[in-house]
Image (cartoon, rainbow, N blue to C red; front, side, top):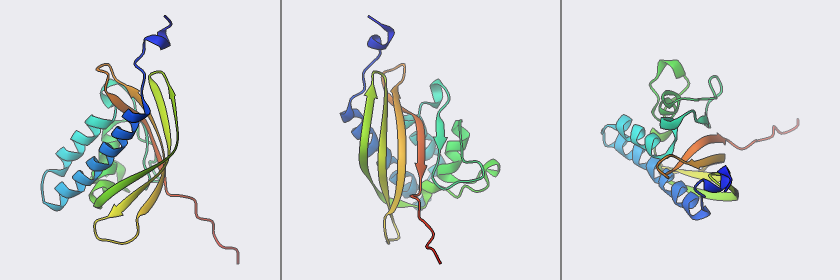
Length: 166
């Protein structure tokens, strides 16, 4: 057996379940915030559940940032989700907007042994109403040492909007 054959294989079913649960976690953080609960604890739990920071670096490029757009540690991810960190002053708490739903539209998934990449759009429904916010994403997953699916790359962007010619 080669080293790649001994690694745990990821399935598309696992990716879809992780995406659904990730979206539910984002909604939960916002709900806890609205109820004046410990939303920092909810966000910390979310990051620990879905991202592989405990076993190494995660490449995290959140949607609504430009000054410090690349985050390679837990602190940067937490700041993006809940804001309030002076080191990341442009963060206003994406997860505490809040959202009532997250819907995924996968365009493609590539699975190679213990690594998978999914790409597409996800749509965030604001609690206050209005149009869903469409965001483009690429996520890479691996299984950690306990065999749990974890995100190792999170890259998301607002879709390009061309400026009308005058």
